[in-house]
Structures are given as structure tokens and as C-alpha cells.
Image (cartoon, rainbow, N blue to C red; front, side, top):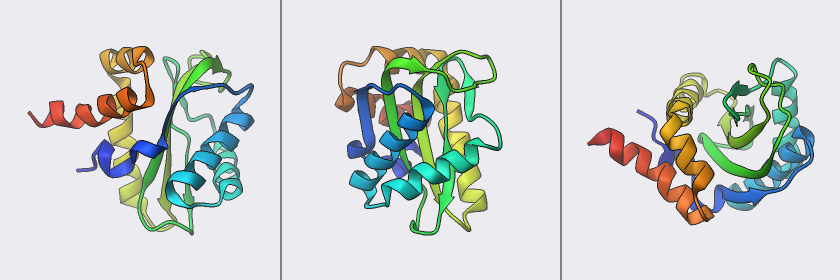
Length: 155
């Protein structure tokens, strides 16, 4: 089973990010992925934009899981961002998004990619967890909450 801490490093968690659009958000996600995982920022944002053309990855309640596949990586990895102000994401419920968990997978990672999406979706669909993430005071607190989800589920 995939866990949040297998997907996310503390350096890939950001709080209070301010962006004006989905495109700017994808650029910020790319920059964070570049810092945390040594990836090409432009390739990340382009991959996310290409996937988004197929349909919004905003699944409702102010949450989005933009995702894509890259040749340059060997394992599934993620970036979590809590936005200062929600941005329009074309989500199914038409609500703007303020919690974003980006996933990147190797090109050949079909089952791994789906397991990671399911793991993140299960976590963020929990209204209590989403509320705690929105109220967390720092990026360290955000990471601790996300890592704590699997500890709670394992108990």
C-alpha cells in the first residue's frame, strides 16, 4: 500500500502560497519539484498543463490533485501546497481550490500511479483532515498532519 510519506518529503510541502491562476500554480509546483527532487521545473509545469487539458483534476471541496508522468523520475513523488487564496480550477463542483497535492510518476508506472492517486484522494476527501490542513500554522504542521494520516489509519 502506498503511504503519504512515501510520496512526499518535508521540503515539498508549502504553506501560504499566493498565485493568481492555475498556470501560475503549475509554475510554482514545478519550481518546488525542482528544489525538492531535482526535476526540471518547466517540464513539470508542462506535464501538469497537458494532463489538465484532458479534464480538471480539481475534484471538489476546494481540493485538486494535478498529476502527470515524466521520463526523468524513477519513483512516484509529490508536492503539497496550501494556497493563501483559492484559485479557479474548473473543479467539478465549480468551487475554487486551496489545497493542492501534485503527483508525478515515471512514464511506465501505471499501477503505482493509480495507487498514489487513490492514497492521496482518500486522505484529502476526509473532511476532518482537510479542515486541519486548512488550519495548520506552518509547513511543518502540514507535513506532520499528512504523515499522521497513515499512522492513524495503521492503528
